[in-house]
Image (cartoon, rainbow, N blue to C red; front, side):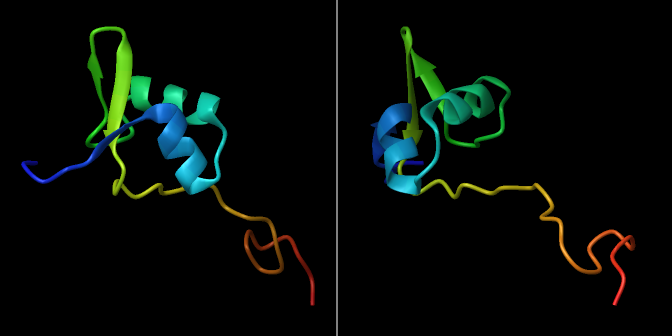
Length: 67
């Protein structure tokens, strides 16, 4: 943790092309390993990977699609 580069959640969202509200929600739920609150502001390591665990619907993804 000594070489992390901390940025605001808004900057992290911009760098990763995601909604800042989503980043705030995930940070408050503990989804990011490096996110922490300093006073009233959230910061996160700008190199923290953003992992989207949602499944995309598509052929064969859930067995309901037909050939």
